[in-house]
Amino acid sequence: MAELVVFSSLFPSAARPGAGLFIRERMFRVAQQRPLVVVSPQPWFPGQSLIRWLRPGYRPSAPALEIQQGIRVYHPRFLSVPGLLRQFDGLSMALGCFLLLRRLRRDGVRLIDAHFAYPDGEAATRLGRWFGLPVTITLRGTEVPHSRNPSLRPRMVRALQAAARVFSVSDSLRRLALELGVAADKTEVVGNGVDTRIFQPEDQTAARAKLGLPAHARILISVGGLVERKGMHRVIDCLPALLQQHPDLLYLIVGSGGPEGDMRAELDAQVRRLGLSGHVHFLGALPPEELKWPLSASDVFVLATRNEGWANVFLEAMACGLPVITTDVGGNAEVICRDELGSIMPFGDTAALQQALDAALGRVWNRAAIVEYAQANQWDKRVAQLQQAFDSVLSSASAPNQAAPVKS
Image (cartoon, rainbow, N blue to C red):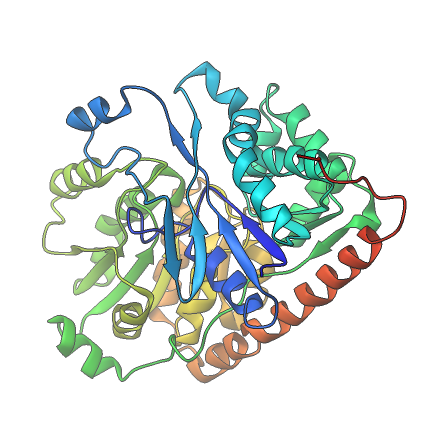
């Protein structure tokens, strides 16, 4: 019998195995101590399959129920029409999950743990109100642009103020919650962690040989979705100048398209236009257990991102001994908090990015210290903090003045 519902439309499935891995990494560790199920609503509208003829991979269909590592993962559908009607996704998502949540409530579920404030958080707080369940919401970064959207901001505010606890993966997101009117005593920073059993440094020469890379090249690497926000194109723009100082430079890009889009064609065209075909390698999406090899083969990790909450991939790269060069957005500076770990530069400043990469490629890094920092940020501390918070929320929810669940 499950006690907790993990509620997120972004969760790995057979259709999207790389989606929301950071949520599963965290919450399946919670599941080792607290029984849970996952509800991952999937957007749908009539005729959706026709769009796939023009855009293969558009909203791939996940099975209604999967068993992942012994845990039930449900994928109920909800009506989501592209365009302006997306502003009703929160309500539609809640309605689409109503019958499932009613059954789970009868089976003993006591808490809904939602990830992302909108639309997931809005849907979860509606369901919590309907069924008399407390709701926690974790802010992960999309809340920053959503908070600037005049149609979404009030929906976020209502959801966050209705939640029993608001977690954030960085202090910058906690400050955003406070700005949106959430009481300070309801907020808590619970950063992401890293699994150092999976992410650990391998011998660089062996890693390069495994991947067919030159033994003496200088290698940059980025890992993430091939979307504008992650900024691989911003790094590619720096390569012609960097090659003047580092003629054997290579740039590895690990990732594929996703819900935010797919820039692979644009990136390929950019590489050809700049004459970089021999210097940029697209490795595609890799499972976590394979990612340590290109990371270990590289010299510097870079992510010229527009927006982040707390990027797991930074700790994963550092666990493999890599310094991180990234932008001063979201919680990035909270992760790359010391000069020995990498450097932070202003977003959108190509010259600063180029200079930071040039300096990083020419510097001798204390890789043992970088690995040690990553090892100090393993998942155990995060999970213990979450368990304590869930206990507190459930204890408060058991008070007599709590709302009663919907009767059948």
